[in-house]
Length: 109
Image (cartoon, helix red, strand yellow):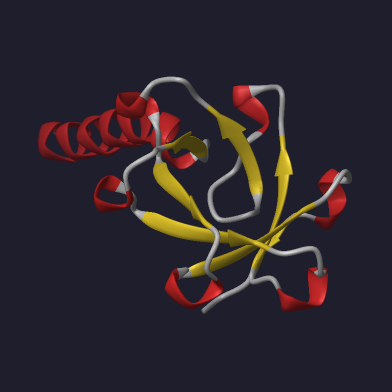
């Protein structure tokens, strides 16, 4: 009985500590390509993008890999670090920005 309670307590503790990381896609924009986790090219055509991003004003609204992004000023707080490039050939994600949250999506690559 006590072993089972310890196991449940550990699982709940893990979920409690991991929940903030799982519920937010906070984005930090860097000027340095070498520190980026994603190199992004912005397109004007939704059909060409693999990420349709909606920029949220609220940190709690952002979700992982959904395309709902919240820009943060702090690199240490970010889930992803993005460098925007002018060259499509060097990008690993192609982003289209939308005005509608319902259009946001992150297609599998």
